[in-house]
View 1 (spheres, rainbow, N blue to C red):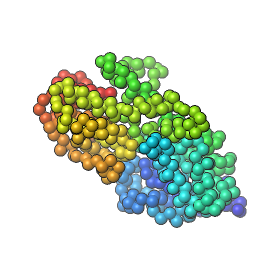
View 2: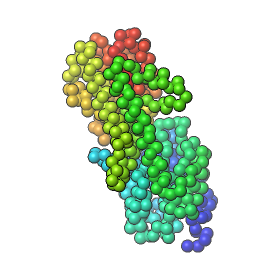
View 3: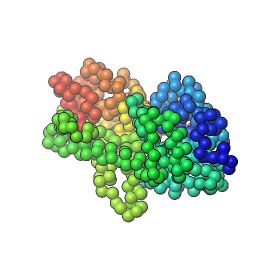
View 4: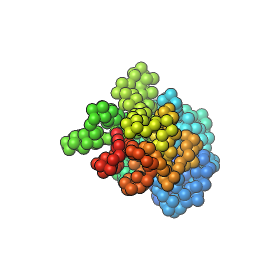
Length: 443
């Protein structure tokens, strides 16, 4: 390889427009990265889902992460033609890493992406993975696939790095530009190339990890730590309900201490916090260590949908409402507020548990991706205007639309008799509703 085609000056060639950057995976993580990089370099945005690509080409942002206007203005060259990846020398893989039904890692998306990249890999390229994985996946799983598919040799014909995504879907404050980025490479030359490239778009700067495994481990523990803290809050909620104490009031009181960590109980779903801990414990099991703290937290968080449904039933009984065929509305179905993503939503657990009691809830969510919810869960949403004559209402997701609802609007959701209101995230004023005669419950 000639000096002017070395990895050392790949960054300069990207900036000058001599080389292109490619993004593989255009979801909630990949698409914002592609859009941001396109402000500085030539970007090819690849997704095998032709429908998603057509939406982007039409100026539609189904993720709501950057908005239609930004999509219309971006210079990203969106495509579903994998051979276009041959035009790029810096390739970023940002595909999801879910878990299987048995809670073990599902590496198919990242393996398939590696096969696609490998088939179209050209000498002198750098491949960077952003997908959350357990330590070792990039080097032990992905590199062999790249080598097999391309016929090239890693370290000689191409280099590999890892820079875990830290994008928080639906968050308009903590964005790609404002969150410090962990970067790593298989050697010093790769690390510098990866670091310089990401510094183009990350205003907060980068942290150079000493190895790919360190970077992989750092990412997987970030969400595991958050998961454990929320599990503690959820366990407190279960305990305090038995004591007849309001958990939110306890946390507000405890939160006046300067070093009290402000976490809150809730449903823990999505494709990060509810998934990443299983990647870490899976690898630990492979090495002969069975997790105690991490898996205990997972068990608590995975059981919160059932806990909410059981309390809905208990409260219906408390106001002498027949449980079977009771009118129950669930407001919100996404895994978090103001985000259309329904993947691994724990509201699904509430629905399933209610069905065990003979209750088929009415579900409304103005933010959710309706087609995705229909495909994954078989769920059909009703509009809020259609929600009438309910016995109980569960505000499951703290969308801004639900926070803006007045008491009069919520009154209209109910039929005759006492009103049961489960406000999972505590977005409403408890005193206002209890003074109005509601049976109010929150985590």
